[in-house]
Amino acid sequence: MKGLWLARLARPDLLRPITELAAHLADWSVNHDRMLHRLVCYAKSTLDLRLCMYVGDKPEDLSLRLYADADFAGCNFTAKSTTGGYLCLVGPKTFYPLAWISKRQTSVSRSTTEAEVVALAHCTFTETIPTLSLWERLLGREVQVAYMEDNQATIKVVQAGFSQKLRHILRTHKVNLASLSEVIEHSPSASIDYIDTKEQAADVFTKALEPLKWPNALKLLGMFKKSVLRFVNPG
Image 1: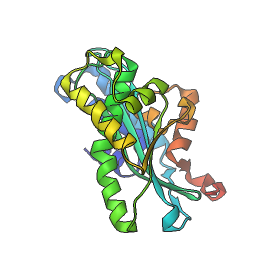
Image 2 (image 1 turned 180 degrees about the horizontal axis):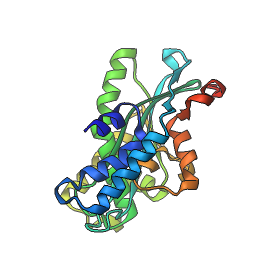
Image 3 (image 1 turned 90 degrees about the vertical axis):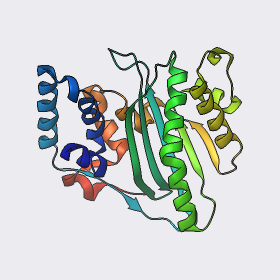
Image 4 (image 1 turned 180 degrees about the vertical axis):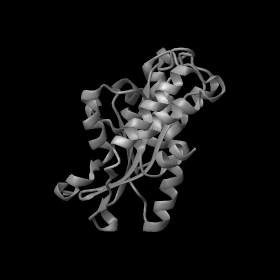
């Protein structure tokens, strides 16, 4: 529980492995002991990592940005996908993480596009819209929201509100797709934009990344070592 508290408060890089271990409390094994030991060793060796936030813009220049991603059939046992999300307050000279999500999906998706739609819907309706209401009240104006997606098929499906290839999806997924289309297409303050996978900040919440990709993942999260913070240029 202490690790989960830390991950939710200031160490988003720890969230995915902690939630993965938490899902196996009822069927714990020796292999999970090894995973926990590796996680603790990583946390101890990265005590100098800091989640950096900076605000250098006027209130009228601020907007929200949601990075949403999914790891298709990431679970080897259930074939369920994993949802990842990273919600930030951004501006020309502003980067302020507000919330991050790593959660196993409750039903099996039959394609990457379907898993991405479920992930985007979960992040939108559990974090983005409630946060949007708060910031619109604080700033006293309509706040722009940019949904960052690295799957072009998902963008087209959400914009259309329907796909012939997804005609098999169950009622819950149909509601996810229809409600997403309504939020993004019928709201003048919302947009869905394509982003390269290398710039997808939510990727770290969906699966274990290769060591070579880890430094870039930390940079996308806004995490830097304490010794180099003075060299980070917010502009």
